[in-house]
Length: 237
Image 1 (cartoon, rainbow, N blue to C red):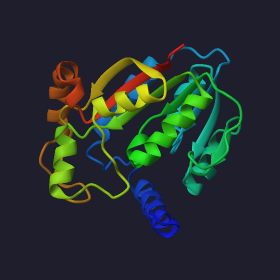
Image 2: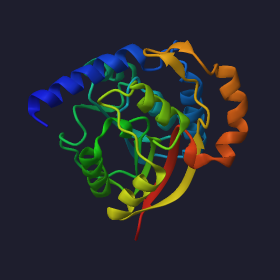
Image 3: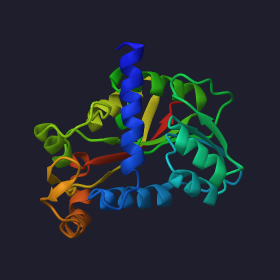
Image 4: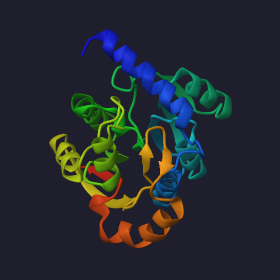
Protein backbone atom coordinates (compact mmCIF):
# COMPACT_ATOMS: atom_id res chain seq x y z
CA UNK A 1 0.00 0.00 0.00
CA UNK A 2 1.35 3.42 -0.99
CA UNK A 3 1.60 6.35 1.41
CA UNK A 4 -1.14 8.12 -0.56
CA UNK A 5 -3.48 5.14 -0.29
CA UNK A 6 -2.80 4.88 3.44
CA UNK A 7 -3.55 8.58 3.89
CA UNK A 8 -6.85 8.22 2.03
CA UNK A 9 -7.92 5.24 4.13
CA UNK A 10 -7.01 6.99 7.38
CA UNK A 11 -8.89 10.12 6.33
CA UNK A 12 -12.00 8.08 5.51
CA UNK A 13 -11.67 6.22 8.80
CA UNK A 14 -11.43 9.44 10.81
CA UNK A 15 -14.51 10.84 9.09
CA UNK A 16 -16.47 7.64 9.67
CA UNK A 17 -15.72 7.46 13.38
CA UNK A 18 -16.41 11.15 13.89
CA UNK A 19 -19.89 10.45 12.50
CA UNK A 20 -20.61 7.13 14.23
CA UNK A 21 -18.44 6.72 17.34
CA UNK A 22 -20.84 6.43 20.31
CA UNK A 23 -23.65 7.68 18.09
CA UNK A 24 -27.06 6.71 19.56
CA UNK A 25 -28.40 6.31 16.00
CA UNK A 26 -26.06 3.36 15.49
CA UNK A 27 -28.19 0.21 15.97
CA UNK A 28 -25.09 -1.63 17.21
CA UNK A 29 -24.96 0.62 20.29
CA UNK A 30 -26.63 -2.09 22.37
CA UNK A 31 -23.64 -4.35 21.62
CA UNK A 32 -21.00 -1.71 22.27
CA UNK A 33 -22.70 -0.82 25.58
CA UNK A 34 -22.51 -4.48 26.57
CA UNK A 35 -18.82 -4.59 25.64
CA UNK A 36 -18.14 -1.51 27.76
CA UNK A 37 -19.90 -3.17 30.70
CA UNK A 38 -17.71 -6.25 30.34
CA UNK A 39 -14.56 -4.12 30.13
CA UNK A 40 -15.40 -1.98 33.15
CA UNK A 41 -16.19 -5.06 35.25
CA UNK A 42 -13.09 -7.00 34.17
CA UNK A 43 -10.49 -4.29 34.83
CA UNK A 44 -8.67 -5.03 38.11
CA UNK A 45 -7.85 -2.26 40.54
CA UNK A 46 -4.91 -0.21 39.37
CA UNK A 47 -3.74 1.43 42.60
CA UNK A 48 -1.23 3.59 40.74
CA UNK A 49 -0.26 1.07 38.07
CA UNK A 50 0.25 2.27 34.51
CA UNK A 51 -1.89 1.57 31.46
CA UNK A 52 -1.68 2.67 27.85
CA UNK A 53 -4.98 2.82 25.97
CA UNK A 54 -4.70 2.47 22.19
CA UNK A 55 -7.39 4.02 20.02
CA UNK A 56 -8.93 6.01 22.85
CA UNK A 57 -11.66 7.69 20.81
CA UNK A 58 -13.68 9.93 23.11
CA UNK A 59 -12.22 8.47 26.28
CA UNK A 60 -14.66 5.86 27.57
CA UNK A 61 -11.92 3.33 28.37
CA UNK A 62 -9.75 6.07 29.86
CA UNK A 63 -12.60 6.84 32.26
CA UNK A 64 -12.80 3.20 33.32
CA UNK A 65 -9.04 2.99 33.87
CA UNK A 66 -8.84 6.20 35.86
CA UNK A 67 -11.81 5.08 37.92
CA UNK A 68 -9.84 1.97 38.87
CA UNK A 69 -6.80 4.02 39.87
CA UNK A 70 -4.53 3.66 36.83
CA UNK A 71 -2.10 6.25 35.52
CA UNK A 72 -3.12 6.42 31.88
CA UNK A 73 -1.39 7.20 28.60
CA UNK A 74 -3.62 7.47 25.53
CA UNK A 75 -2.79 6.96 21.86
CA UNK A 76 -5.27 8.37 19.34
CA UNK A 77 -4.94 8.82 15.57
CA UNK A 78 -7.80 11.29 15.10
CA UNK A 79 -6.59 14.82 15.85
CA UNK A 80 -10.07 16.01 16.84
CA UNK A 81 -10.53 13.15 19.28
CA UNK A 82 -7.02 13.74 20.64
CA UNK A 83 -7.84 17.40 21.25
CA UNK A 84 -10.97 16.38 23.15
CA UNK A 85 -9.02 13.90 25.25
CA UNK A 86 -6.50 16.56 26.27
CA UNK A 87 -9.34 18.89 27.21
CA UNK A 88 -11.37 16.31 29.14
CA UNK A 89 -8.47 14.43 30.77
CA UNK A 90 -5.74 16.99 31.55
CA UNK A 91 -3.85 14.50 33.73
CA UNK A 92 -3.60 11.94 30.89
CA UNK A 93 -0.68 11.98 28.46
CA UNK A 94 -2.19 11.93 24.97
CA UNK A 95 0.00 10.75 22.09
CA UNK A 96 -1.46 11.72 18.73
CA UNK A 97 -0.71 9.44 15.81
CA UNK A 98 -0.58 5.88 14.51
CA UNK A 99 0.34 3.54 17.36
CA UNK A 100 2.49 1.41 15.06
CA UNK A 101 4.46 4.46 13.90
CA UNK A 102 4.82 6.79 16.90
CA UNK A 103 7.56 6.24 19.49
CA UNK A 104 6.31 4.94 22.84
CA UNK A 105 8.75 5.25 25.74
CA UNK A 106 8.83 3.07 28.81
CA UNK A 107 6.77 0.06 29.79
CA UNK A 108 3.27 -0.33 31.19
CA UNK A 109 1.41 -2.69 33.48
CA UNK A 110 -1.36 -3.09 30.90
CA UNK A 111 -2.18 -2.27 27.28
CA UNK A 112 -5.84 -1.82 26.35
CA UNK A 113 -7.12 -1.89 22.77
CA UNK A 114 -10.91 -1.87 22.83
CA UNK A 115 -12.59 -1.47 19.44
CA UNK A 116 -9.20 -0.86 17.83
CA UNK A 117 -7.91 -4.10 16.31
CA UNK A 118 -10.59 -4.08 13.59
CA UNK A 119 -8.80 -1.10 12.02
CA UNK A 120 -5.61 -3.11 11.45
CA UNK A 121 -4.93 -5.29 8.44
CA UNK A 122 -3.00 -8.48 9.03
CA UNK A 123 0.42 -6.86 8.66
CA UNK A 124 -0.64 -3.99 10.90
CA UNK A 125 -1.97 -6.39 13.52
CA UNK A 126 1.28 -8.33 13.56
CA UNK A 127 3.21 -5.08 14.06
CA UNK A 128 0.80 -4.01 16.79
CA UNK A 129 1.13 -7.26 18.74
CA UNK A 130 4.90 -7.27 18.41
CA UNK A 131 5.07 -3.70 19.71
CA UNK A 132 2.70 -4.50 22.57
CA UNK A 133 4.98 -7.37 23.56
CA UNK A 134 7.81 -4.86 24.10
CA UNK A 135 5.65 -2.52 26.18
CA UNK A 136 3.72 -4.74 28.57
CA UNK A 137 3.11 -8.26 29.86
CA UNK A 138 -0.68 -7.81 29.75
CA UNK A 139 -3.08 -7.01 26.90
CA UNK A 140 -6.84 -6.44 27.00
CA UNK A 141 -8.47 -6.24 23.57
CA UNK A 142 -11.30 -7.36 21.34
CA UNK A 143 -11.77 -8.26 17.71
CA UNK A 144 -14.65 -7.93 15.28
CA UNK A 145 -15.38 -11.58 14.63
CA UNK A 146 -15.58 -12.85 11.05
CA UNK A 147 -17.38 -15.98 12.31
CA UNK A 148 -20.44 -14.04 13.48
CA UNK A 149 -23.79 -13.14 12.00
CA UNK A 150 -22.69 -9.51 11.88
CA UNK A 151 -19.38 -10.42 10.21
CA UNK A 152 -21.12 -12.55 7.61
CA UNK A 153 -23.87 -10.01 6.91
CA UNK A 154 -21.62 -6.97 6.45
CA UNK A 155 -19.34 -8.90 4.09
CA UNK A 156 -22.26 -10.44 2.16
CA UNK A 157 -24.03 -7.09 1.73
CA UNK A 158 -20.82 -5.19 0.95
CA UNK A 159 -21.21 -2.93 3.99
CA UNK A 160 -17.74 -3.57 5.40
CA UNK A 161 -15.55 -0.50 5.10
CA UNK A 162 -12.05 -0.87 3.57
CA UNK A 163 -10.49 0.12 6.91
CA UNK A 164 -12.38 -2.56 8.85
CA UNK A 165 -10.79 -6.00 9.18
CA UNK A 166 -12.41 -9.01 10.79
CA UNK A 167 -10.59 -11.90 12.43
CA UNK A 168 -11.60 -15.20 13.95
CA UNK A 169 -10.92 -16.12 17.59
CA UNK A 170 -8.51 -18.79 16.35
CA UNK A 171 -6.55 -16.27 14.29
CA UNK A 172 -6.06 -13.72 17.06
CA UNK A 173 -5.17 -16.39 19.61
CA UNK A 174 -2.58 -17.88 17.25
CA UNK A 175 -1.08 -14.46 16.51
CA UNK A 176 -0.86 -13.68 20.21
CA UNK A 177 0.96 -16.96 20.77
CA UNK A 178 3.48 -16.07 18.07
CA UNK A 179 4.64 -13.03 20.08
CA UNK A 180 4.74 -14.86 23.41
CA UNK A 181 1.28 -14.21 24.86
CA UNK A 182 -1.16 -16.77 26.24
CA UNK A 183 -4.87 -16.01 26.42
CA UNK A 184 -6.15 -16.11 30.00
CA UNK A 185 -9.78 -15.06 29.58
CA UNK A 186 -12.30 -14.72 26.76
CA UNK A 187 -15.96 -13.92 26.34
CA UNK A 188 -18.29 -13.15 23.47
CA UNK A 189 -20.45 -10.05 23.09
CA UNK A 190 -23.26 -9.81 20.57
CA UNK A 191 -24.26 -13.25 19.31
CA UNK A 192 -27.13 -11.37 17.67
CA UNK A 193 -26.25 -7.84 16.59
CA UNK A 194 -28.94 -5.54 15.15
CA UNK A 195 -28.38 -5.55 11.39
CA UNK A 196 -29.88 -3.44 8.64
CA UNK A 197 -30.98 -4.06 5.08
CA UNK A 198 -29.35 -0.92 3.69
CA UNK A 199 -25.99 0.83 4.20
CA UNK A 200 -25.49 3.53 6.84
CA UNK A 201 -27.62 1.57 9.31
CA UNK A 202 -30.93 2.09 7.49
CA UNK A 203 -33.93 -0.27 7.62
CA UNK A 204 -33.29 -2.38 10.67
CA UNK A 205 -33.97 -6.08 10.25
CA UNK A 206 -33.23 -7.08 13.84
CA UNK A 207 -34.34 -4.54 16.47
CA UNK A 208 -32.25 -3.85 19.54
CA UNK A 209 -34.76 -5.31 22.01
CA UNK A 210 -34.65 -8.72 20.32
CA UNK A 211 -30.84 -8.68 20.27
CA UNK A 212 -30.70 -7.67 23.91
CA UNK A 213 -33.06 -10.47 24.96
CA UNK A 214 -31.40 -13.27 22.96
CA UNK A 215 -27.85 -12.24 23.80
CA UNK A 216 -28.33 -12.95 27.49
CA UNK A 217 -28.23 -16.62 26.47
CA UNK A 218 -26.42 -16.56 23.12
CA UNK A 219 -23.34 -14.74 24.37
CA UNK A 220 -22.76 -17.40 27.03
CA UNK A 221 -23.42 -20.44 24.84
CA UNK A 222 -21.73 -19.28 21.61
CA UNK A 223 -18.94 -16.87 22.60
CA UNK A 224 -16.75 -17.73 19.61
CA UNK A 225 -19.57 -16.81 17.21
CA UNK A 226 -20.36 -13.41 18.72
CA UNK A 227 -19.88 -10.13 16.88
CA UNK A 228 -17.22 -9.01 19.37
CA UNK A 229 -14.70 -11.40 20.92
CA UNK A 230 -13.14 -9.97 24.09
CA UNK A 231 -9.88 -11.37 25.42
CA UNK A 232 -7.22 -10.89 28.04
CA UNK A 233 -3.68 -12.13 27.43
CA UNK A 234 -0.53 -12.44 29.52
CA UNK A 235 3.07 -12.72 28.42
CA UNK A 236 4.55 -16.15 29.08
CA UNK A 237 7.26 -16.01 31.73
